[in-house]
Length: 295
Image (cartoon, rainbow, N blue to C red; front, side, top):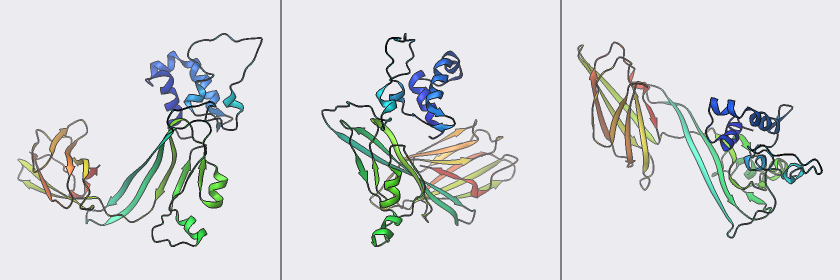
């Protein structure tokens, strides 16, 4: 169970997770925590299953009959029985982010890919799904080539995945929950070049002003386009009234965060772009190697 799971469950019940809503619903919070954890071990974390027997309204207990929800005693506690859809559909999203550490000389010191596989499941009954990956361990077991394989690290699965099956043949076999959920997360330690390369030049003019020139260059395939690129330029807290001149996109100064954000809606490949920032010279200024890029 990830640290965000209890927060997601509370948000399903209270809509807005705030200090006041927790105080107003402390009884339900205690009940949810009792079901989420048992002697420190994660138990039922699916909000749809929890809503079957923990409600916000106070219901009177039937002393004549004591009925335990079927999902509690069922081996597949994360999925209710009797689910029906007119059209069976499964949507898979693979979301990956690249973490890079680059020194002032432009050399990549550390690079890794952090990814997750998220599913939207609209299937009837109790379906069993299987998913295969180009995992290097699987290729070694089957004797296939490893040119296109990857080595997954820090793999974390949803509780629905049969771990014994994955250990045997590297097949991800599972009965999925209904709706949205994260099937797995992973990390890849691989050498990747920055998708967008950034260089900066700082010029100081006596004690009046400082001018920053930022160069950004796309390093991805020609048929690809980077959308929604944000380049963050850190500035000192005593900087005042910066002025911008950009060849593409727009720039905005956020004094509360001491950064200038350069927004580029559509960043074409291998196209050098320039941006100029002029502001009164502060007492201290960051080195050229402290710029950050977000995508």
